Amino acid sequence: MSSEHRRAPRKHIIETRRVGSWGNVVYEHVLSCGHIEKRPRLHAVKSLACVSCLRTQKKELEILSLGAPTREVEPYVEQSEIEIARVKAKLAHYLNVSLEQVEVSVVDKFGKQKISGAVVFLSEYDVNKMVQ
Image (cartoon, rainbow, N blue to C red; front, side):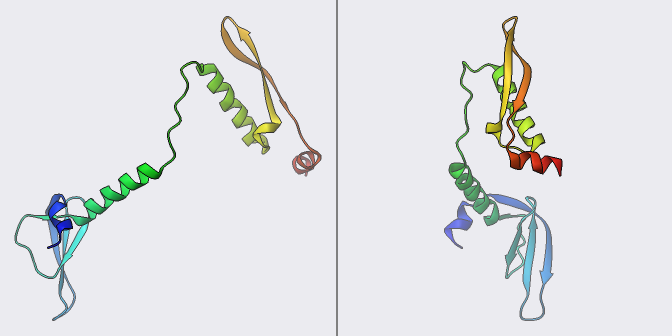
């Protein structure tokens, strides 16, 4: 038994299946977590160490550490500014142009920023693409 099996969480055996023919029998133990442990012998105990769970936990930690850092919204950025950026992105996506080609004009009404309109700068290529 490896040290990996000693550290793995123990899971209950739901089902045991015998796979193979005479001389090449392998027992598949279906565990409560959904993983399958293949062993050469049938185990009479009610729980087994699930190495797959341990490996999955290690990979999840690896993936989380390699992932992009979460961008925190600055406290001084208002919710309306975030909404304006979303509208700008939706317009660019809808018109199939880059984000730099879209300008959103904003007015201040009663202390809140409201969208008053938008301007989209189109190149000759963009116009021909939309017309055809």
